[in-house]
Length: 113
Image (cartoon, rainbow, N blue to C red):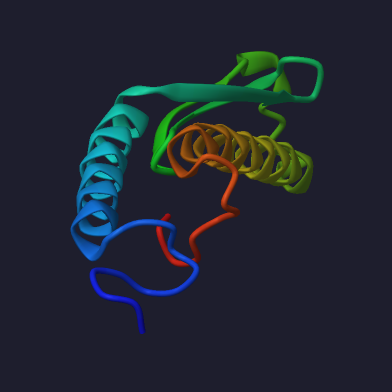
């Protein structure tokens, strides 16, 4: 092994460590930012609205009164489920998009979110 580095890293170990520490700080900052950002999804033509944070915490569920039918609770449950799942998908997309800014397209880092 060449002095001062590992083959294929194109630099010394100190530089690699600095880059890793910067990426870690950036990722911690991103996680804080994601907790502040939200996404919104609707179902039933806007009858149900769900707001989810970037860390996938449900922040709000709004239900228009006209969709509350005691004789069709199953439809209401389906609408809520659809809106929550769509909001979670959007939160994943937002987190992945933000993460790619930090990782520079290195691909996802499993287990981060």
